[in-house]
Figure 1 (cartoon, rainbow, N blue to C red):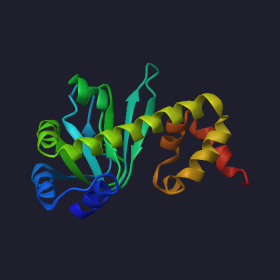
Figure 2 (figure 1 turned 30 degrees about the horizontal axis):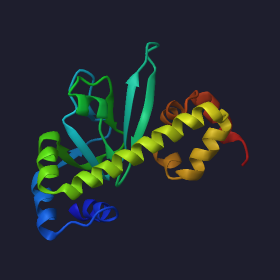
Figure 3 (figure 1 turned 90 degrees about the vertical axis):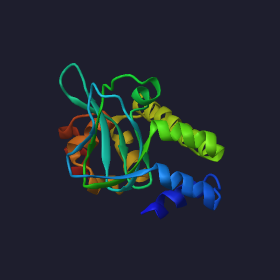
Length: 190
């Protein structure tokens, strides 16, 4: 299982065998059942989670009591409530398994230690945060600059596997429209 994380890290930085062993000693394996929560509002996010297998969603419940999904995570993606994690504040979000999941968990306190012992891991996480920030900026741009249909078509082109893995109402929430609208879009011929 560790191989997947190791390979992902190697795409961005090169660790020595000793550095890999330090990391391996600090991470923990975690499994989740479908619909099980990793984080709920009021709890401080305890660290970062790397998805080995499965799919998760990060969402909040808005004033109208609707779920608003802000992030998905599939294999080889990281997920956390970074506002809660970095500011050590109670989360306003849920992180929930959409499918059964196998994860690696890197507790915040271990991450700080690892950054001191293995500075290349700080570089790796810096790159991951940059990538997440860019993805977030792009998503905001798509919401403001594309029609609902354009946003859906663009998402399907970028992430065709999500269409089969994610329930329609969750995809609609993430893309910012109703499940009914998504049904009509999917019924149209491409």
